Image 1: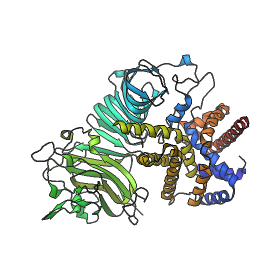
Image 2: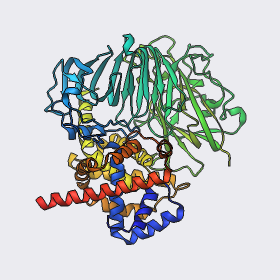
Image 3: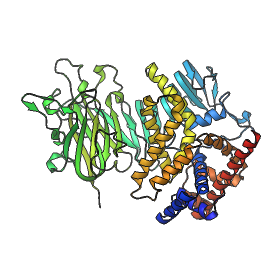
Image 4: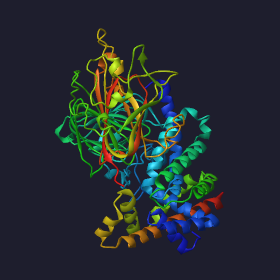
Length: 453
Length: 178
């Protein structure tokens, strides 16, 4: 590096987040004029960026580096970093003699498998070692671990074997069955969280953008977001979404008892105690895009979303805030909380079941994206939301959540609860519900407190 | 997943895997911390996936991805500007321009980095491993090693500079062989 030590120290301070405003300003002035300093700055930054993912930080060079046969180191390095922005999961590959490595799992079953590396040759019975990666493009593969745990992968999926009792799922879908005593505690880590099996079966899914989904089919799973966050126990029949990002927003959806009391397993019924409740006279609901269903003689006031109660009967258009689909979209609901509120939780409720055609409960599903905006002028809602300053909080799709394949599978009454793994979701004055489905919303509760100046 | 969606998924993955490391280095140069870079990369990946249908040709993926990442970094910088010390938008754009002029450089650098890490002393490799791979906070490493955090920051600074020099020399050597 050709820049002066003094200038390089400024670079360090900046990239270690230790620079004062004056130092940042000084570095900026120098970099604007000095091409070499910019060049050194960029080189330094790239080293810093690459180090957490460098494939070899060996303790000692004692032999050749062993990798799973025919998986080139470089394709592994390249693939390892896919979507793994949230965790430093990558393990150093110890340079051990091949003979000293022990297989800890093997491919028990392969069904129509296509691998991302088209030249890959993997056969039933192939052994797997710690740090091996499985990059399945399509098909199904079962991996049996020496402790008895079985992971079923569905392509496209990328999984790394972290230990005899854990894997890292960077992308795709993996089902774990841990029925043996030795396999209890088997964990799947995703870019946003870790799912620890407490017996005996669950499915983890990771979308390309890092959204993780946990679905527990049998037993219980401990959901660990960060070591210092509250752990969530997810039981059989329950599922949860974990949004990637700093705040790690969780979305839980539950079926209700299909009565006007709106009773759910753990989500409370519609409340009059939330910050946005209409009784406080603070919050407002507007429909800036789209239109509410109305018929001659009646129309629904969107403020009924904040009245502290849901519908009284299952198929009640007059008590439901329902955006009609027009031109392929449903529109938005804008909730103005009057000033910045530190939001802890947002709960939404829906209920719909046709009185005669019982399987017709299409409008019970909740499909929306929730955005937040701090106290400022609301931008033109025809512009792309994130680009115009809205922060995406959570994506909700209750059909995906309940794995609805037939209409009859869909719960007629649903509650969705959005909250942060630790602390608040964020400070927002406005919440925007971008509706993507035909939902009979009965209530939206927003819990939080005004941001202290 | 429908076959057409799966093909799209596969194609996205293949293109993304090829580009990701260079994109990460690029993003890191535009934001003040590794944590910020992770946030921006996450946003970038989400946008790339969401708008993948808009990509006119796979050959343009890298350029498109760099453009999206630059935009995401600028947006992130604007969000953070209230309470953080960050570069002006003009300088960020200048850095982006400098970087985009030679995107292939990242891949070569990353390969060289692997070689250069092997040349470090065992003590320095351990420090890198603790600070970067295990993600242990500098304060904690310092406490365990009975050193001051500042002395570790300085030590890491020297290692990063040594690695950057080593990479530059390695690339020069490679050029001389061509």
